Picture 1 (spheres, helix red, strand yellow):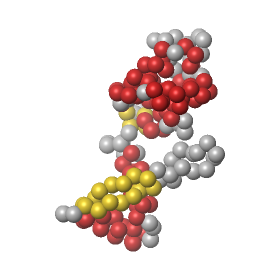
Picture 2 (cartoon, helix red, strand yellow; picture 1 turned 60 degrees about the vertical axis):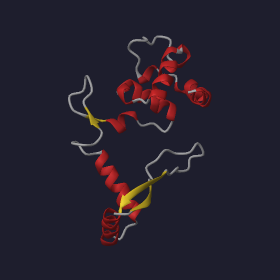
Picture 3 (cartoon, one colour; picture 1 turned 30 degrees about the vertical axis):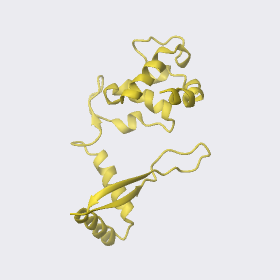
Picture 4 (tube, one colour; picture 1 turned 90 degrees about the vertical axis):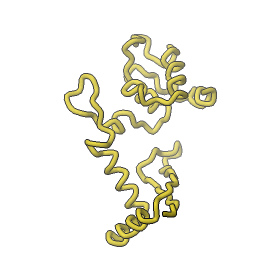
Length: 153
């Protein structure tokens, strides 16, 4: 069955520094039957195909069975990971992910996290290296150094 590319654009993306929305374009190859199914939903609901796709992805992310709910130490109920780690700033987002689910870091992110964790200037002076929290982070310093840190990674 031939595949067809579809671009899905999300309005729920980080904001640019200027304050305007920043959409992300993501191309996906879909089997013709699946693409046609999306088109039919689009027609029935009278909404753009991209809205159908974005809604389906958002539903999947929020699904308790297959989505981003995770069990975390100290929490009675599963936590929605995306809400816990999302931040408009990529640097803070990496730190939050490293603190909450370090096993999800890529190799490059893990190396970057090791550098950030070891650098005392990014942490409150009273922070314990073996028990860091997001409240200990000096995000302004990390954000100022982020382009250089990220380029070196």
